[in-house]
Image (cartoon, rainbow, N blue to C red; front, side):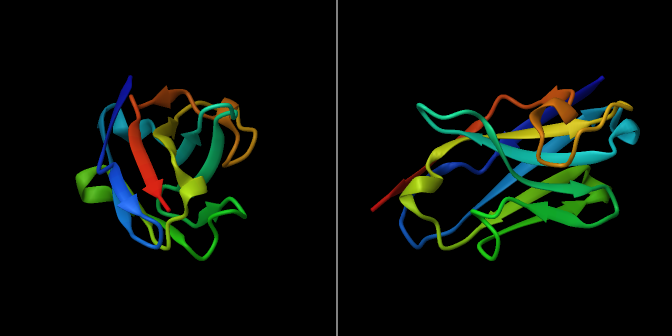
Length: 125
């Protein structure tokens, strides 16, 4: 099994930056994709960014040009650098890992089978 642990959330003013980290443990060799999702009150959980291990990133249109997903394979850690934050970015952010054969796309919740506990990001205007 794969365990994921997020860190780095917090409160920031609009226009500010935060970097989230997601450390993977367990059967990390089985992970193909890592993704970041967010869940705001009253909204469904949605994909923000994803990266193929050793490959290219994908982003939701709402964060393109502002967020950057990256990986440090030596540390089994994925990062989400968030710049130019907006109040609408306020949400609980979850890290996800995909290590099974079913695949529906990099920003689809049902593609992922391992989830972290989440870290809160609050952006004030």
